Amino acid sequence: MDQGFIIFLLGVVIFICLIALFIVAHALFKGWVEEAKLHARDAAGRSLAIGFVNALLLTALSLGFWALGENSGAPVFAVVGLILMVALIIGMVFGLTAMVILVSERVLPEGRGWRQLAGGGSLLVLASLTPYIGWFGLFPYVIFRGLGGVIMTLAGAWRARRAARGKAGDG
Image (cartoon, rainbow, N blue to C red; front, side, top):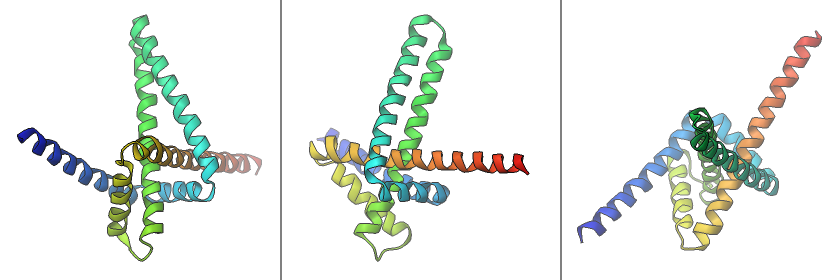
C-alpha cells in the first residue's frame, strides 16, 4: 500500500513541476515562446512536419554519434551525441511551452497570467495521459508541432540576422 501512495505522490509532484516549468519558461523566454506559438498556430501542418523530421533526424544523429563514440573508443563522439540530444530536449520543452500557451488561449480565453498557463498546461498534461490515444497520438502531435514552431522561429531569426549582416556589408 505504501508503494502505491508513493507513486501517486510522485505523480502529483511531477505534475506540479511540469506546470511550473511551463510558467517559468514562458516568463523567462517570452519572446521566443510566443513566436514559436505563432508559427505553430499559423502553419500547423508545416510545423508538425518540420518538427517530426527534425526530431527523427536529431534522434538518429544523436544515437549514431553515441554508438560511434562507444564502439570507437573516442568519447568525443558520444559527447556530440549527448549535445544533440540535449538540444532536441530543449527545443521540445520550448515547443511544449508554446503549445501550452496555444491551448490556454483557446480553452481559457478570459484567463490571464500564470493561472491561464497553469490551466492550459494541466489540461494538456492530463489529456496526454489518456491511455493509448494520449500517449501515442496527442502527445507526439503536440511535441512535434511545438518543436516545428521552435525550429521555424530559430530559422527566421537566423535569416533576419543574416539579412542584417548583408545590408551592413553593402553600406
